[in-house]
Image (cartoon, rainbow, N blue to C red; front, side, top):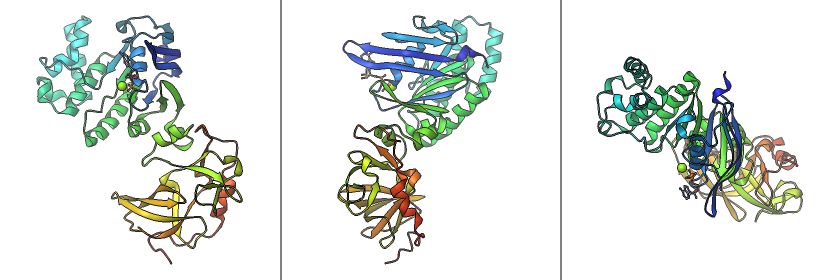
Length: 376
Ligand code: ADP
Ligand code: MG
């Protein structure tokens, strides 16, 4: 594919007076990639996107689109389109006029406008609504108008800033798939801003996670889920969030605070934190080997149950399938070595020790009966 839609940021920073909204960010987006800028509110996602679009000027650093340095170019010369959360539709114009608005101001011939409109309206399923005013449309249809307006421009790059956050959950999930399908069909390069980790995980080829104006992690959804770079990344991706437990010194290794009998990591991990995802924990009968625990309460979610379990002086979440009622019962927790995450005292991932050495010891014993048919 042509390099025309490659986007490259080099040490880009944005300061507003004393405050630094975006702090020395670099990344390189390949043509046709679907990249997510993910992070909590205020972390600098929109500012980053707006600098790429040319709606804000970078305080320092360079932005390249294709072979061109666009750092000081006005938005109209950057060859991209943008979709906002607010949709920014003109209320007094019909759907058709809203969609072709950009073409009209670029003086594209009438016949060509009509031809492109027909094609795009079909693509986003708006053919029967072209004469309506935005007020007479549902949220999802308005979102499609905004998308159509961006697609009809035929720019190979589309920047989207939380385009689905005004929609209800059901519609959001439909639109996620539609946008993803459109992007791959039209081979667009997309940078998509969201604070929603589900959107990030389900749509992105690549997720750039931000915190306080900086990039915390840049990788595939799989990498962010399986190898979070920090406790922040670990708790931002996944629902319910990863359990994070402070590690103290026990007799034969690092233990969870308040539970001195069960080593869960090597001594070198003391002072840091142990991370385990709720879906990676197995709950067994109290007599089975593992970390002694007690079920405090549970939350039934339909397909699964989240059990809140006390271990030492901490409580953690365990995801169990189906409906489970275990409150008040003693149990034993285990997890596979490869699902153990260790973080240092600064919250950064540690890959320098084999966390499995101790945790995997639990694995070598025969599996007791599964939870649900608890034996006492
Ligand atoms: P996000 O999109 O991740 O929620 P933003 O990029 O909108 O975050 O904002 C990042 C930071 O920059 C925030 O602290 C915000 O208050 C600040 N900011 C954004 N726009 C402006 C502006 N025009 N003037 C001053 N500060 C701003
Ligand atoms: Mg924003």
